[in-house]
Image (cartoon, rainbow, N blue to C red; front, side, top):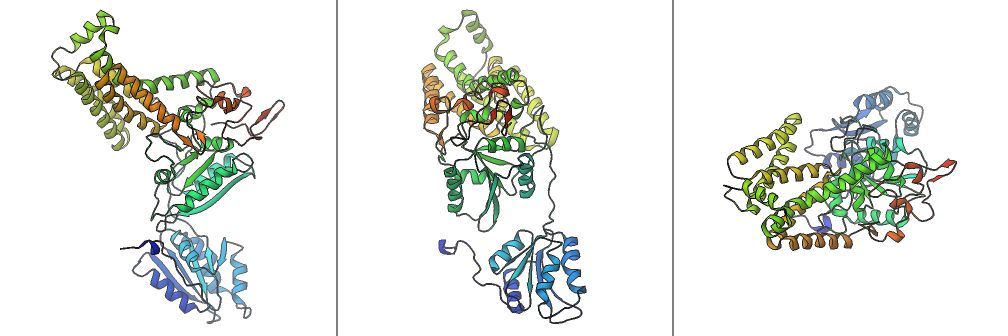
Length: 509
């Protein structure tokens, strides 16, 4: 069993000037790795000129390697004793090359899709940038669809994602710090921020957190998110996940930090507030009154998705006196012949719809959408005809499902789906008092949450320090010409982004 002191596999040996020793180290490390290609080459004119290259088949551009390294070496004319310096000068003109005497760096480069080169008589190796592994192209996001705005999204390629961000912010003050997480996966992680807008302590804290992570592998930013969260038991996400480059660029221009993880088609934004999850990208491309109306609908949808089922149980089981007599009679007649109590009836339908939703996600393509919609209609109608549930319960469950789809962030939608069952339980026990107890507990928890020092409910709480930039992009969105200040995330003294007659980085989401 691995002990903690040997948790990370480090190579102690440095690069040797004796080629044979370097070959032995590489051969030992990559023993029984049939996809690792190891070649020793010798110059045709001078047999003293020997190199050794190592790369992983399928991860490199073989044509680039042949044209830039192999053929020039085999065909070069020997000019003297310092042949390697001449060879290095030749290849550096056509390919990106880095020298290092650290064997661990060279092995890491091989595993990352580059080529390592060793030469006889030289105590340094070369890392040749030769990545050429297949990757998915830039396509339209499926989870953050917009009617207006750019259609591109992040993919699994680290450099493609960093380029998509750079393409939108052409400013030398946009900084990117790169590190690796996971001693086996060696996953590249990049931190993007605006040097003049971000709080320096925020960048330092995130760097420190990444450095303190001791894990074997990271395969997605979701794993990293859970490791970085300050309140790991909270059902509410403390990082904003997005697949849209424009939304990421907007967050960076607000003084936030974007965390890019290799092999993950998305980015994490921090800090974050509760209200960030109700902002959609096309809010900033549509007219402000349309955006404000749609954002208000999202807040109403959130209340319906979390509270409607519990409120129905509370009113029907405990407080029917608050309803008109005709409505009570209508509800009662709809439940004639139903064998289950209201709570069981509602839970059965909610669980059935959740299973249909999960099945729709797992099924491929259009078939998944068909199962989600048609399956819900068929199950609901069949259950009513069989007398297992009442029509009013089907209506309540359907409205709840539709409302949850109106929230533009999937992780936030999942939180409300879970809390819905908590409120169903409290309302089943204590009626309308249970409803308010459940809502109060959620609000107390939200008041205690912070994201890197920013209150989670900002500007609902601490509105006096929120600033005008935050308040004008809240439940209702102000016109773009009135949003002259950046929100609370930006460092003090750098919050003005638009002045009369001039603009300074008018950021859009």
